[in-house]
Length: 563
Image (tube, rainbow, N blue to C red; front, side):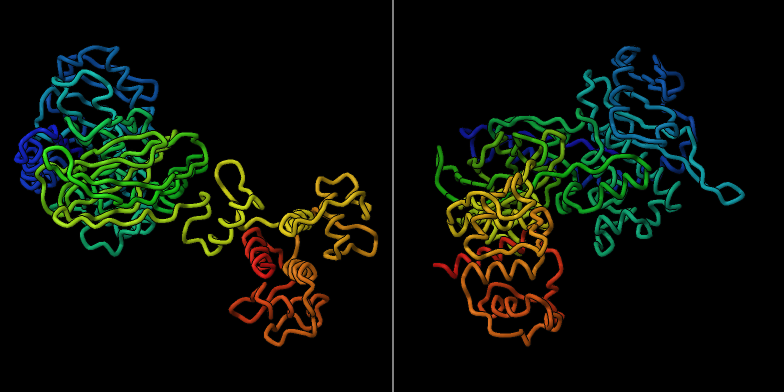
C-alpha cells in the first residue's frame, strides 16, 4: 500500500508560526490518525476482495499489453487507450521477471475509496495445491487511486513501482522460498536486510513505516524501480510544496533503516531469487556530512551551514546531492537544496524548535541512491563540527586498514587508482610494478639497457635496470627477472631491506614459518625495523602473493625510515 504525504514550506519572510509548521503538524496528525487504519484496510481487502473483483463493475477503457497485463480505467480522466498504454509501458519499465505474467490488471480509480492519502493497493492471491505445490493466482492486481486529480504518468510512477514491488517480493518469497510475509522472520530477505533483531518490524505493525511488506516494496523501488520512478527534483531552495513521490527526497518511508543500496548483498539476493541475470551496479560511496557554521539569517532566523565530502561512483561523472532534514518522528524529510557536484548548503530554520536530523542523499546516473552520515542538531544549541575524512576510492573508505598509507602515496603521486574511482587494494602486485614503485620512492635515476633477457621490451625495463644497478633486486639463474610474476611477501621484504641497506643478522624467532626460507634473514631484518609484520597465528607467509594495500603500507614504512 502506498501512502501520500504532502508538506508546504513557507518563505523566510513569513512569521515564525508559519504555514510550514502548520503543514508539518497536519502531516503528523494525519500519519498518527491513519497508521492503524492502513493496516486495518489491508486486512479487510485480504478478507473480502475476491479474485477478479474491482471497485467498479465495468472499466471505462482498457489496454492489454503483450505480457497479458490489462490496464483498466475506472476514472474518466484516464479513459483513453493511449494513456493506458503509457501506464503499461511505465509498469514494465520496472525490473521484472516471471512474476509479471501473474499480475492480472492495474486498475485506475478516480477518487480515494480507501481514504484520503491511500494512493495505491496491491491484491495478491496465492496458496497451495493439494499436492503441496505453491501456487500464485494470475488475477492478482494493483489498484491506483486519485486518477481524477492527476493526468501525467509521472504522477503515478513511484506509486506503480511501490505496488509492483509488493507483487515482485511476495511472488518470489512464496514461489522460491515457500514463505509468505506472515512468516517474514523465516525469509532470506529478513536476514540479508538485517531486520531479525529489529523489534519494531512486524507484518501487522501499527506504524506503517515498520510494516515488513512496505519496507520490502520501498527497497524494490530503490533497487529495481523504473527511471521515472526514481526521477529527481532539483530543489533550488527549501521553500515550496513537496511530497513523498519525489525519489531524491523520499527514497524510502522509513528513514531509520539503511537505504537499500547500502545494504550489502540485498540486490544480489533478489536477483538470484528471481533468476534475473546481471550483476548489481555499485552504488556511490557515502559522503561525510558536518555542521560547520551557525549564524543568524534574515529576520533573525537561524542559519545552519553544512559541508560534505565528495562521493565516488564507478559510472557517473557527475553526482547529485540533496541536503534534507526532518524531526525524529516525521516520516517525510524536507528539502534544503540539490546540487550537482556541489559540497555545501545553508539551511534556514524558521520558527522550528527541538531536534532535527540532517543528511545528504546522493544519486548517480543509474538511479542508485545512498545517504551520508546523519547529523543530529539541537536547534536551541547547535554544535559546530568538522567535516570527517572522505573515502579515498570506492573500495578504500576511511575505515580501511591501509587508508592513511594509500592516501599519502596517492597525494605524492607514487601510486594511482583505476578507472571508476577504485584502487583494488586486494589485487596482486607484479615484480616489475613494485620495482617501479621503489625507484620512484627512492628517486633513483632510470637505468639504460636491460640486464635480463625478459625485460628488454618491457614497460618497466628502465626502472628494473635502475633497481638492479642499485643492488635492490636480483634475477633468476636463467638470466630472467619475470617482471609480470606477482611479487611475494618474502621478495618484497628482501627488496625493502636492500633498498635501506639494513643489516640482516639472522633468522626471525618470532615467525614460525620463515626458518630455512631463502629470505629468512631479510624478513627478520624487515620485521625488526618495523617494515613488515606477521599474522596473528605467528606466521609471515613468505611465499604468499603481496597485494596492493600491503605493498603500499610497506613502501610507506620504508619512506618513513629514509626521513
